[in-house]
Image (cartoon, rainbow, N blue to C red; front, side, top):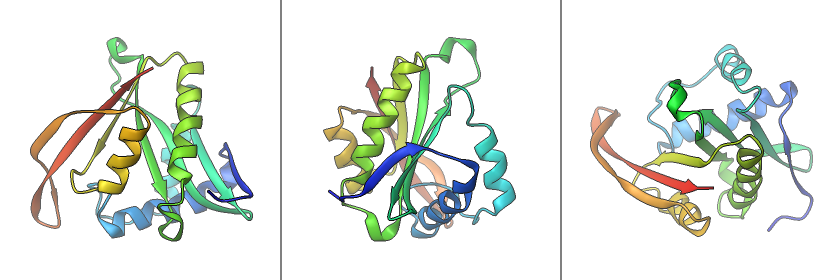
Length: 165
């Protein structure tokens, strides 16, 4: 656990830090099916969609963004208003230090405050570090979608996980 780590709501000035960490996740091929590095305009548009119930939070260490998490719209159908998709990304140099857990604790609190009854996520079955965290935080594996996406020209499986709040 890092001393001086601050978990807080994001600000517009955090977009560059969020972008850098997201792009690391894209480059490392461990957290997303995205393959194209994202520029500032893409991230700004993404960020603007996270107002109201859909929040972005950051982990800040020594005034530097070292991780972020977000509640995302799962589906725009009204029947799914109580379900939030989530994202968690940690800077390469800070993975495995407990930051993801702290972000998830805060994100769950925000989800409850915003009347979500369930959080879902999608991860790669080979992302053992992420799955370990999610299971410790009370998420359960729903199942694995076989050949669900294509990454670098190869089919990849995607695991769905959920937590009832």
